Image (tube, rainbow, N blue to C red; front, side, top):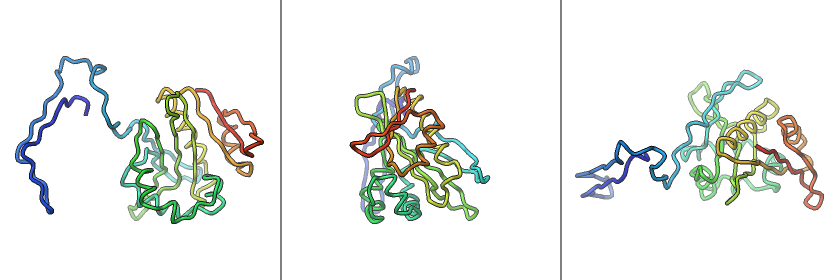
Length: 220
């Protein structure tokens, strides 16, 4: 909350069972201050502006939103739905499930700095009320540059239903709102479906023969 200038909690009593604030004081910036002059937050708030609703080709309604720290258990289940082929196309290597769902790895992915990286997840609310992640699209900003790399992976059972196309379109929209000038990506030669999606959206493609990878890029 950028309007908070300082917070003082004193005394604060902490025990193994609970924490009690006996007194607290919150100081706000002057109401006459221009909002653009407020200090920049050390931690960027959750980007609610990138939450959207979408209906897939088969009629499934989903919420596409930035990832949250509490998504870690959902990400574990999502990775269980990926075949070896899908894993290889996403990571350019056959990363074992144990490595992909390790807490040390997923905690960094789910609790991330939105200034550096914006991952979007496709969230399905099942009839039993439980959430299920069907896909993940990621925009990694290049340090010191106004550009980013994208990566997308969709659950095997949900591929071919338009989720990848929609995720990539949204990542481009996010890039524009983040004032990026270019988005790039890489894919293996056998990932023909991803190349078709990129071509349909307007990416330029070329084969990097030394690396045996297809490169995609689009100017924003």
